[in-house]
Length: 317
Image 1: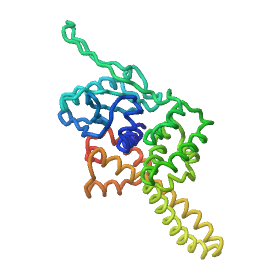
Image 2 (image 1 turned 30 degrees about the horizontal axis):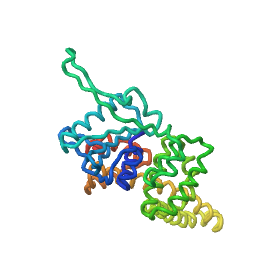
Image 3 (image 1 turned 120 degrees about the horizontal axis):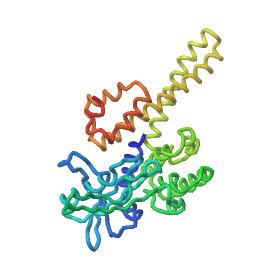
Image 4 (image 1 turned 135 degrees about the vertical axis):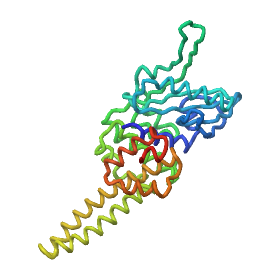
């Protein structure tokens, strides 16, 4: 259960590239996102920035939330291919989002040596472990890295205060659109460390969440459907057991079904959004396939598989 978290964090890099340049403590006067497609090897690096500085360079940020034995070699491969394609030096940073992503493959070094010793490659890269970072540094940092705060060195008891500080900053500094992106990403990333119930409890009533276009559409759709079902079932129950009691029970059941439908629609929207960033916009056949997915559990599984898949056809055979 890793890929949605990686994809969500990549979106934050798009929001403010310079924020992430500062986060990894590298120099530069400007940074822009560039095409990270390395089609010669049918792969794609997570996010790549072209950095303007006294000596221009590329910054490759690789995000991981699950352990990979070959993480270092993958970072090395991307760096070599990017340098070859763009003819610029590459700074490589591996960001681990949770302790479960750590391991021998994320040592900060990679390479190989031939049996004779004549051919040897040695590669070093930087590793940032989010759970080791002080929370106050992230709370005081750029907005685009703020969703990492709940994953940093913070205890469960400190979480409400952390969310409160995040809310205060976002409310005063972010546009409604950016606030929605930050809160939605925060919700996704918190799933790495906390239960779904705990996440919803902490974020319930957060103003930025309510102002998220995606979140608002999901809630409105779920509530509208719940009210409609509630009215219909309330009338039916009212005929059999009494008008007043039927309306109350029908509305309660309808609202419950509406909320469940809202969660399913939320997962469907997230799948389309993440898949579009990975493969491009889905065609009508693919959209219909997504609409035909019957359950929330199946949609969540597809979301997890987005980054591993090579295309929409691979994800939805």
